[in-house]
Length: 489
Ligand code: BES
Ligand code: MN
Ligand code: ZN
Image (cartoon, rainbow, N blue to C red):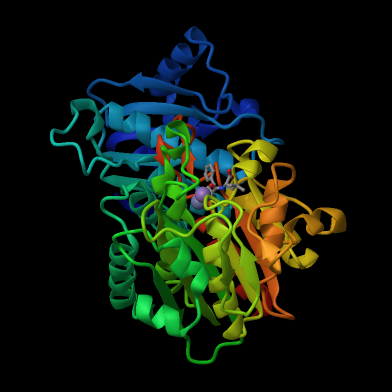
């Protein structure tokens, strides 16, 4: 889809479809279309009692006219409309336009639209046209039409450019997370990193199982022990000429989580190809940062492993000496994410970034606590957390902070025979997992952990999401980086 700003007058535009975004207070906002068209649309709106409510559209076909179709797109009440409502509305509009076989579309927003709104509209349009059809051998007829040209009235080039970078990063993540475990394993994930490094001119370091042993990364090695494809540590780095800060991102990269010897029941094993979503976010964002001219050194770290049962598997009762010297007793091999992330967090800490943000599909307990549509956020720094959460409210990626200050709960990760244990019972499971990770974050480093179990994947179509991988989290990280740049410059 080719997206451009349009500064001409709507009455001079000709094409397949015009999408007019309306607030409930402004039901008449299409009057500028001229009397005859406006009257026709007005009649349709009255007939079908279209009220411009959120997530509603009204389609009118104008046979043989300069504009072939008009879509009214509801935004809801002006006082209540959020940035994400524009994304959803744009997604709905492109979906409808594709259904009506339109190629060339103009979107017209309410007059007060800001550049942030134009970015959101761009994102919504790109995210809303996402499909994953790679493995369909025959194209399903009504599902393969694409809008080719999208014009957004009065949108600035920079707003569109940013929207494109963000949405493309998210779609890239969705493509990668949607790939099954027989395609993406620690080795092929490393190949993806290689491609990104080449395309985006990033530094790349990949450590194989021999090197991991020398590096004493026994957590990552133990979890990956039973897989035919051995684990990898992936490190991507973006280094601008005169960096003013250093930031690290860490992603959980379990390419498939069977549970290991504590094998998952069938129903829970399904969707575990998505257990690499954190890692994919790191790849997606490293790809994007090179296009954003950020003044920070940015490092992306991924611990890639497949959690399988088998002769090489790590076991319950095992004690593992981790990279930072701490010992971990294994209570449950299905609590593997924290065991891999621990070593990667240690390694990332050694590079001395000021901030580490990790993303992980870490615990079912987080889904129990917050539901499937909200990610858990944990941090050792309240300002970092509140800044990140403020950004998430703009990106529409729902996040909610959970506490790390419960000293009685913290005792649950103590082990009788080692320093800490990798699973600490059902209650507060998302918190004890985060507390486990915290043991591996270097002194003085601001750290934020996003538990995105549940949000990485959706079972139902919603807004700009379709069934499958969501790519949740990557836009919030990018928007947080952009805000950080604006604050510092
Ligand atoms: N990858 C899972 C967490 C998960 C669950 C992600 C549901 C997405 C949807 C993780 O490795 C896991 O298995 N966690 C266990 C931990 C338990 C054994 C302490 C869990 O949440 O049940
Ligand atoms: Mn698991
Ligand atoms: Zn897992």
